[in-house]
Image 1 (cartoon, one colour):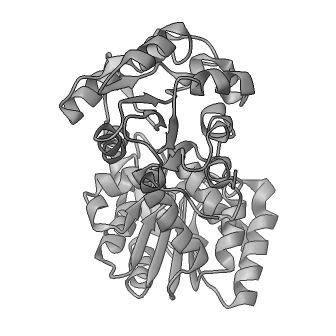
Image 2: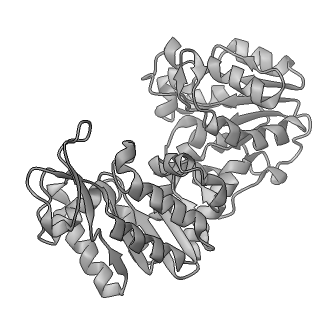
Length: 397
């Protein structure tokens, strides 16, 4: 399938464009606390604003459960957009209705920001009537919200289906995301090292299965590594584990061996008796984890081993922290992965979520080949599962 690009839009000059963005940003005290996702949308907005008669941005924010919620209004985002673009942004108090239709039809050279899509339960329900009303005032549709590409919601699935090819396209961010992640999936340069961490195997079973068929080395870290250690017959004390996933972990170990994939599990770990007020922090081999402690990070030998694997790779994909990195004293393993990727000469991709926070925290995001804005979407694409938003954009009709 071919993803339509902005350059593929027909008659966009003077058009009225609905652009779906991912403006689901943290808001505190009535102001945007982190504008990273807003900045990511700027190239698409600037391209459209240079050509279209009116551009209306829409997005969700938080989980308002289908009801208006002033605390989840996108109004603070309008102020942030104005500052970053250096031009006025007109905020509309709804995303559908007579006021929206009238404003869109009469506006000239303006950027509009529609109110939170999820104030309407029909958005998450992918309701066709809601989609028709949302799309009605517009001549063109652009989706630049990769972070929601795995959701079958109205603004990313039903709406693009109402615009023919030539009148719908992916934005700059969506295009970059899909290009980078499909390179990892379809044609990864070898050696290919995948680093998978985070708390749970259960949320990453499909990506692990898919990666096993492509990688030369698979690194397992974070809380999910504890379940792998259990699967190898080791005790992990009070560490986070998923007893129901021990069988899955064993299967991954067996499949890696059968395929000749090097599986790197922690060879030393950082343990503590308490996350917030530790009386002891030790580095021990995984065979020596006592009953009264929990594993919270990779040990120094494990960090060096992972860094060496990354240094020898031509493709690296990373999703999920190596420990409780939100606690600075337990962030060394996660920061080591971030720095190793930044030093790599290979094609390096960070797959969204907490890993993105980590590379920004380490100050190395600009030294990586691609930093994804979509955790769930990036994992689903890597797993080979269809992304509803991409299917809608790439449909033949």
